[in-house]
Image (cartoon, rainbow, N blue to C red; front, top):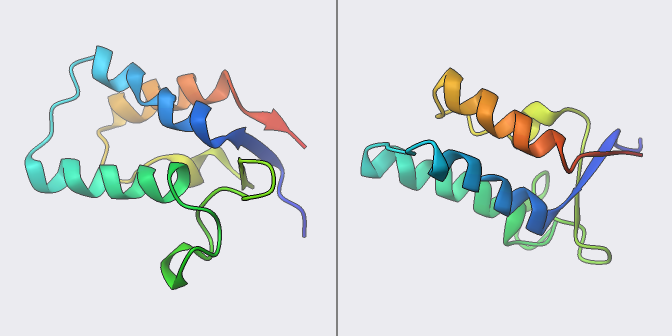
Length: 96
């Protein structure tokens, strides 16, 4: 079944600038988990290894495909940071 939305993996990665501008401040362990989450979408092609079967960009076009924007939001973020990231991602999200 086709996904509902797509976002360029570079646009997704740069969406995190909204958090940096808002004073992104998490303990090292949590920040590392957030970084791993975002890297799975931005830095690895889908199917790169067993851990990237559902996350990662399509290597043919460089887009991440999702059914919901929530798939792109790290669960470790505070609600305020989730809202900031959602707003930034929405600027680049394309309905397919």
